[in-house]
Length: 481
Ligand code: GLN
Image (cartoon, rainbow, N blue to C red; front, side):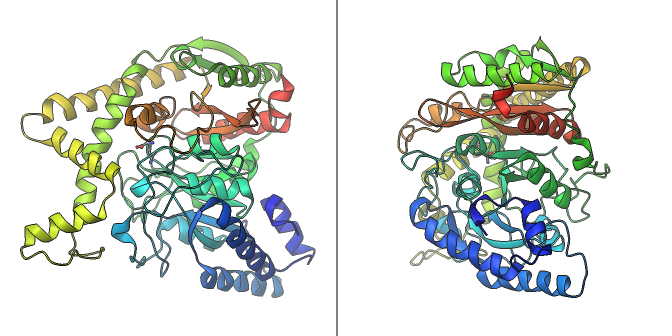
């Protein structure tokens, strides 16, 4: 058994043929992950006990001749902002270094109900704020493809573990690109479902109106299988959607003839030429497969980053207010007043990026600035969503780059937050509109750095998105061009 390259289908086949047991696979994945972690720092901690007991249940079910579920025995990593009961959940913050999750996120419950085996918690940017994983209080993650480079962020650990093969699939979270950008940097598939498609219950809130949980995988089919297992209404999250979950696997027919694909012209300006060239090849391949490609326009794209940083900081300043030393976190010693305790706990606990966002968000929500910034940003959000709605009257899906450039060197953009924010220019809009979007591998630069192609569809049209991605992958990606 080679843990590093297994797919969900291969795990299923291997268990059925008794090539290995779920317990052997879990142990092998844990051992491999611990060894690889010395290189990449992609896991913050492991959940060996929980993994081995879940695996034992799968083995027992198999022994009784029962179907242990679509994810039976599959080793899975979970971003350390998604709660796994009795396992530490740090959000990559000093503040929550000792916090142990009191319950399971709904997505985690559903993974295990489908037979999944959670082996550990993946590193990320502190409270999911960042684009390079360098904002983790426990050290950055190194990109397994090129160890001197970042894996992207904020779900950098979740992307890296799938790329290095220590987990078959993983869960990340995406608020402004945090699944798709690291997926593109590490050369794996990353999916941000429609807002409300996956319950946020048990996801530590960053910006609640933008937060999504979604899968990482080494191929499109595995990502679809993972999403299929966790999607659907959850009474514990009032924003989770009632819409029925489509059959993703049945939608992946390989046939995209006469599908109408739009290229938003605003997304092809300002990207590095090698990245642009690879995405052009990806588009040529889709054309070869029979899709009809035309140019479209999303005219409000240029306001997306400003709009995002007003809304996400406003929501973050409110969501992070609870970390004050009273509950959840360790309490700063030495303060002799309540205000002093808040100040010192937060001052010591939060990293620089969190502080920057709390201050920005408090400012845009403050009396006198609320209308000028927050309300204005909400109006712009509507305009951006309307751009997409108009485009989807003409086309079935949009095809764009994921990031203007491939994985950059560790430290390269640390001193310039604006440069860092710009790396999300093509991904933020999907979260603002709440539509499904994904990154699918689209070749590599001359230096061997992976590049991703983004596919976006209308609300709850994940099935069409997977159909395009899987047809592209099945035909060899850019090789079909
Ligand atoms: N990089 C963006 C940010 O820093 C997006 C983060 C995310 O999607 N969680 O906010």
